[in-house]
Every structure is written in C-alpha cells, then in structure tokens.
Image (cartoon, rainbow, N blue to C red; front, top):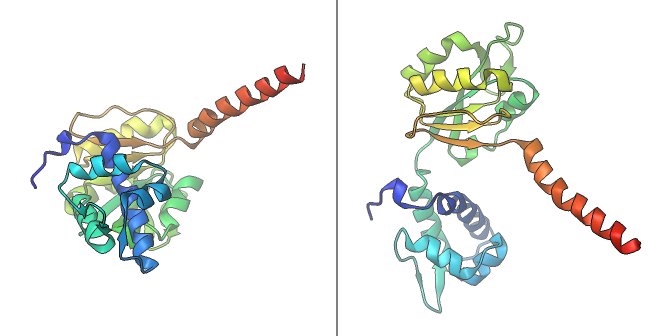
Length: 219
C-alpha cells in the first residue's frame, strides 16, 4: 500500500514505535498472537484506537483471532523504515550529549550514531563509546559524505538554531532536539522537541493542584 507520509496523522505515527516495542516484547516472551484488547492494555490505548491506527496501512488481523505478533511487528518495522540502519550525527557533548553518545540502545534498534561533534576545543578528541568527538567545522563534510538525514541536537539554547541551520543546509531532514528552545525549520524537515524540564513542569501543574485541593479540604 503506497501512502503519502502526510496522509497519516502525526499522532498515529508517534504511536507506531510504541506498538513495535510492545510487539517485540511479546515476541521475546514467545507470544504468537495478540488481540487488539490485549495489546491496548499493555500500551494504555483502546482496542478501537489500535484497529483504527493500523487500518491506515492495511488489514493485519482477523476478527476473533487477533494479530500474528511476528507478522504485525515485521510490517510496522517496514512502515517505520526499520528494515535498514539509519546513520545519525550528534551535535553537543555536554553531560546530556555524552550520555546519549554512550547509549548502546540506539544501535540495537536501527539507529547508528556515526559522528559526534562539539565546538568546545577541550572536548575535541574525547572518546565517547565508538566515536571520537570532532569539531563542528567538520560537520558539513561528514553530513554530505555519508548522506546523513537524521541528527540529534544537544547544544545550549543559544546555539541550537545555528546548529540546526547547518544541519538543514547539508541535507538533514529529521532532527531530535534536546535544546530547551523551539527551533525553526523548513516545512520538509521533521523536528521532535524533548525538554525534560518542561515535561516535569507539565506534571507539577497537576501535583500543585492536588496539593491545593487537599489544603482546601483540610479547612
């Protein structure tokens, strides 16, 4: 089934890796088939939502029988492009960047960090996992030589837009941004922003409301 990427709601695309991860766990447990209800309970979504999400890509299960775990996992992996290994560059090797560079979980899941870069001369030459930190000035050459389309940005906020501009100018189309700032990119570039502090603040909202509620009840 040939589907335009823009035809699928982004929220559905964001759920597909979660489906793949859960199906992978099921396969490791030796489970051969799973119902949409059982899969939904593991993920925290309704069975109807799973059926609707998967219907964008075809028919994968049978009423009353459920999904073949290996078959569905294989299809979702192909939909996500995980039948190949994606080379990625990482820009920024502060404490967060160093942790990302050393994380082996990327490579086992089809993401291969092939280059790590920073503009701090004291960090150039530092060995992080399988990579040696290179200067930012080498970034355009590496991006073009290896046809890199994915990048991780873990630089301070003041440098984020500058770095993203260099990435985009040299062919990068997907950026995972850890910098605490929303960067601007052309429409054909996909960006995912991860700000741990902002995510924690979205939870402190609920906790503070709960504290206020308890305080009011005590009076």
